[in-house]
Length: 124
Image 1 (spheres, rainbow, N blue to C red):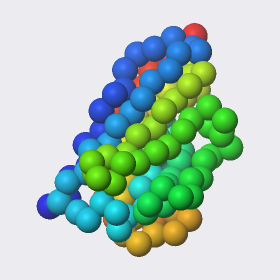
Image 2 (cartoon, rainbow, N blue to C red):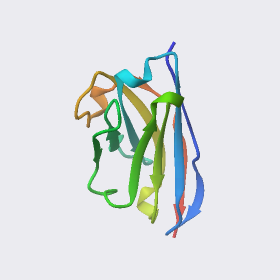
Image 3 (cartoon, one colour):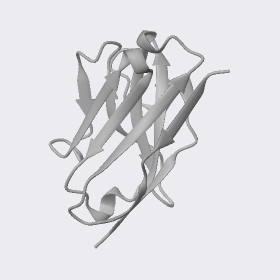
């Protein structure tokens, strides 16, 4: 079955940077819009960023715009999230997700497959 495996999370200080990776397998990666979501303790899962099939279009939540950058390398079946200027409110488990032939996919319900998540903790 489809597998999405996130990596790169960890404990950092405010102002630091991290790069998350999402390795996909058993799917035609270039046919999927890919997204990053996050879920903080006691809160609902929320949209962070999305990228279209070939990477030509990217979308960001207002809370991360200008600090986070989503990218993908279709030849490697991998998606990334570069996170700069991290804040304590960015603390959450980060999930990657795949939406088959999706367009402007911003909600949890849009996505077909999910990874298990990687935790990010930002200390003040």
